[in-house]
Length: 91
Image 1 (tube, helix red, strand yellow):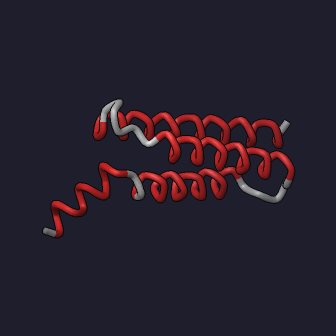
Image 2 (cartoon, one colour):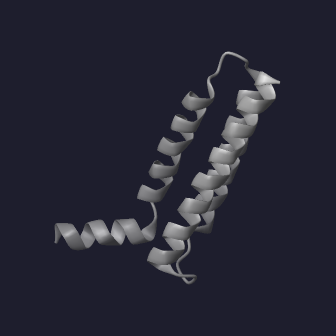
């Protein structure tokens, strides 16, 4: 039961972080420049982390959620709207 509960918590966090990424990118870029490749990478990374949590008992749910949160921030940094914003700040 404890293993299933931890996996469910991680899956919920992955879904919420992915939804937050989608909302933020849609708000910033709109539908014309939406980063579908980064979204796909984010979904695949989330599935891998959930399956690793399911397989290994010694992984804490907080560790997996933190790793996915950092991965989400990394994906968000390398999208066109963020890079364009950094370009305007620098110049």
